[in-house]
Image 1 (tube, each protein chain N blue to C red):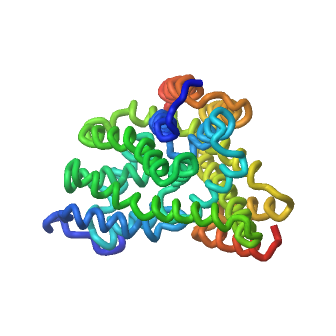
Image 2: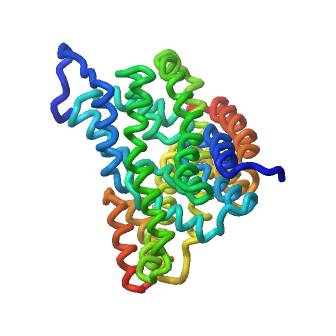
Length: 176
Length: 190
């Protein structure tokens, strides 16, 4: 391993991941975990899970876990650099493709590409779900919270922030 | 169908850079538990920057491309009204408050995370957040299993096993599976 400043490592890590976020940031969570916890040793599994929980409780897009991994490694500058590195390639791509969209949105290959990517997205998001479920369980209480939240969010239109608030209250009460 | 959409002859909305920044900032700052529904309400219903159809069309583009859907949508809407500068204004508006709030919360947790009630709260939030990702996977899988299970299931399982269980590097999995899946979905399209 050659010497590299933490900020540069963060920038490189997320710029590389950016274009792999097929179907959203949740799809690259296992890879982010693999890099940050297993390969680079930036944090423990538990720290990763805590950062993810904080990111999900904050308002805004669900890519904030990226910001917080960068923050953990290199402070506020690391958080900003991670966010920028993750967003730059994909936002640039969106900006460029926008002009062409009208020309190809009705083409049959566009549908085939989208249909083809969808199952891979599902597989990757399922992998994220497995990873997070494994690293957030402390006992039967958290199992109940995870499954209850999953059922609520999958089957009802209730805003998931209420499930998070209720789960936080259970935790404060010392029940988890 | 319901709701008041601008009549076809009316002047199109033309938000300034400042309005784009503030518009996206106001949505992101209150977007607890997901930004997309609030974004739609702001763009289509409250400010009428887009018709429902235009919104769906841009959303399809943002879902087609890699990256966060809501960040891509900020780029697309910003660019539509203000070119490159509009895209930058909308995107920074979308990210400014959430990024600051998340880092402040993480710093607070680093400081007070030793307190038992604080740690308990985050244990609960973490368990619930994992549940949300399970729900997301279920909701994304449902239409695929209904419409084309034969094509979809092998690729769902392959991606899950390779990345979730075998922990293979994502880029190899994506580079191998995506082209194959697209070809299969093209060859056996409905």
